[in-house]
Image (cartoon, rainbow, N blue to C red; front, side, top):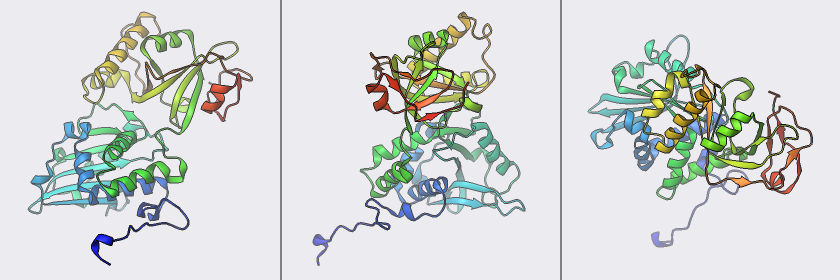
Length: 356
């Protein structure tokens, strides 16, 4: 058999048609996706270069791989302290055996909505108390901390950045044809247990007040607290708002992004960030002014609590001419199948959440 006639070898785990060695990683889903990311960054030069060129990372730290002769990627690195701590992913950059730069990543599952500040405090604790000998010979200013979570968040801390898994998805998607390993990891993420998709539910339905509906129609922004029963635990493709009375739903709004931040503490950071389109910033500015003008917020005071801001599409929305509604309307939040919403006048929720 010559090299030219080399057969294509396909790996299958048990009877799974589409498998890769990411499927044999031990642990739960969060562990698998984190270890998988570490593997890709360590074994694919393309993936590592693209990762370092992500806008948020590039703005925070400049790392030219040609300047380094060794890169070490650790996954689930355990501290040697009395109380054991773990770094999800640690990337160290060396030149002539001198550690010059490091990136530590606290990676939370795609299926979990974790508070950014809580994860940041965890990373600060690791460094402030010197729990990891591997970082003892590097200045803290040369360590970039990344909190990788389900949804994006705005931070006013220059040494820590927030990233959403969607940013990793996008990076992988645009480079999956360049490297078989990247392609395998991308497919692994979107297929693991059938749940890791760009969205997890199709339609999210909530009741809406008159002022909120007016703001949505003007600025295509919806906001709610990021706590308790308001937390969006499963990312929807569309959001719709039920009218008072019968609960009719008039339109499906495509969700472009969900941004989590504290308006009081992080508004200026968002406005100065290069990660968001100027149009989005302008819409948020106008939304804030609307809230003040209509006395929904105190005059010129920004709410001092973390909120979820849904950025809605202005164009990719669906008008519901038949005005579907639930069998009985009240203050619940619920998920619906898209096909049910589009076809039926009376719709049944697939998952009803806690009443507001």
